[in-house]
Amino acid sequence: MSHGSADAGLTTPQSTFYDEGRFGRMFPSLPPFSADTPSIRAALREVGKPGGIMDAGDDLTDPLALIVDPALNTANPNNPTMTAGFTFVGQFLDHDMTFDPTSSLARRQDPESIRNFRIPALDLDSVYGGGPGVSPHLYDQTVDGGRTTFLVEEIPGSAAVTCDGTPRYDVPRNSQNVALIADPRNDENLIVSQLQLALLRFHNAVLADVKSDLGSGYTLEEIFAETQRVVRWHYQWMIVHEFLPATIGASLTDDILTNGRTFYGWRNAPYIPIEFSVAAYRFGHSQVRPSYRGNFGTDAADAAQQFFALFFKPGDPNPADPDDLRGGCRASRRFVDWQTFFDFGDGRARPNKLIDTTLSSILFHLMGQATGTPDSLATRNLVRALTMKVPSGQSVAKAMTLPPLAPADLADLVPHHLEKRTPLWFYILREADVQAGGQHLGAVGGRIVGEVILGLLEGDSQSYLNQDPEWSPTYGTPAGFGMTDLLLKAGVVGAL
Image (cartoon, rainbow, N blue to C red; front, side):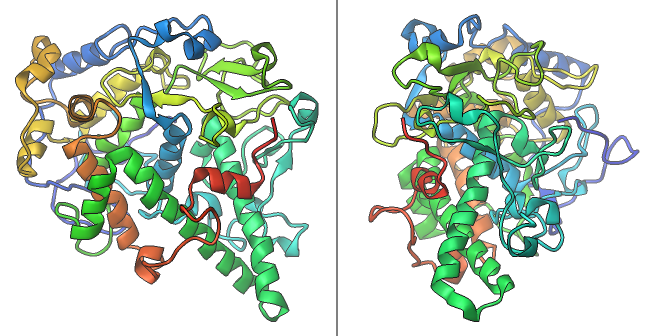
């Protein structure tokens, strides 16, 4: 997604005031990791360039081989503890918390001058929009007058290319294939788009149960509100009990829940720290695979009948049904079989990549970037840390009274003079590799991510952690509620 300028000035003032709906700083007294000079920009471009030290060097000629051939994964190993779908759960959560369409890579900015167009909470406003009254295009006008039920649409021809012969569904689209959803970023790729669909259908399934449970004595508005609460609380429970432990480690999750937050607080209302949005929470970029199995097609045992594709493939000649996993398209084969992405106990799930400083080569030539701006995701992340004046990983570790990484752990940055003032995003990726073998975040990154996510839930007066912290899910199993339970209840898991 392209970005414009927030205002006409070259710089914006910096303060320690945090206001609702704004970005801010967790460590406002720390200096930026570097002054913004031509030499430091050149060094960051060198670190993040295609073929540079962060590029896995993937052979992108065969999407299937990238998944099944161990020899093609040695430079960018798989994560044995996390399945591929959690990369996109993380992306979905990011879009639920933050939306900044204004910031620029070219100018120095203070994050507190940038409006967050998303409410800083995990409340699914990226799904519900403004509700049936404000966002009627999201809701099915043929059911309850458009006051309760999300609109979803069948994919024409999909039944003929599925294992079980049943049709699959897509988010609603207009005549130009633009997704009619509350956050357009959730149509950036096929997987997150189908995850958005799963949340729409989860709401609709829960709605049927709420209608049955409450009976006829309640208004449609009351039924919708109760459905929304149930959906939100299950989603939040999954974040706390499944996503966070997998991402930051179970012990750190328990520590923050038990002993509280140390570094993330607010004056008026929760805000999004720049250390989180520009650095720590971008760990998911390291987890992206170069290719995925989108679905099993008509035969779960025959790879030739299945849909394997690169994550992105710039220049594909067929925009209506490209041979990659970009979003913004509808065709019979463009649906997801979730058995590849989450563990349903059938042995078909695939892992994501380790959290480390190696990114899949597919991310070094992004599509749709403005002329003159870098198309390497690594370069963009590093330069954004410069324009946002993010502190170094070493200074944040010191502020947290944590031992910094040893010089030997950052030896590859010596030629770029960044080994002692390491951009926080790179530092957190390397820390995860050094401290946790890349399976989850390390001490600095895990603390930032854990405190912000749990803090947003604790700062939301309507979250289950505030309303009823002892609440347990209605759906799922006695062990709890996770993504597989959400997908099954939503009815989006086809038989193979």
